[in-house]
Length: 261
Image (cartoon, rainbow, N blue to C red; front, side, top):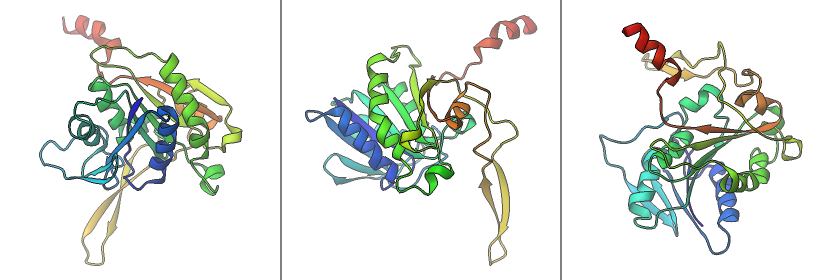
């Protein structure tokens, strides 16, 4: 198996090293793991692509490259430059430091990389590690992902739904904020929504007097509706959410047609 990995925390992020271990286990001794990851952190860039400027790409080691672009850029670089005609069997993105459950998924560069792979017709899975008090001070905050990641991805490869439609299914996997021994299992869960928990801005003044705005996140341990991703994560389960890049609100099309006559 040939696997391409990327992330949004940057080429030197510890979560990418964990993903590399997961990918090596999945690929096996006869497989290949290729890394094309952002040269610098790209958290929060979503599915952004560097359409208006070129990006530099550098070979750091055998099958390991850094690109000055977003995770979606890195996937395209991997498919069309680094691997050329050697199309990967799977793209893995992560392991993100922090959850990409609920509304976080909409901002996530980790998901942006997986989404781009799916749009390019390659099976893709995004993986993220929920951070909380139990894992924040642990020797390895990625322990749950490290211990349970390969088995879950293998199960998705073997038993998951992999269609060949225009907007292919890809998967968003979030490991709970607990140690590996306390993971209760996995649950298929819809994307949730954290009510009254939005990104916002906070103003600060530099010593020069110039005014700057920082983007400020909301509380991450606000549970979503029962059975949805963040809720099952906070209950100790790995969430598995099937996704598509199709943004159409299909549930309102018929009603809108009737209203507009």
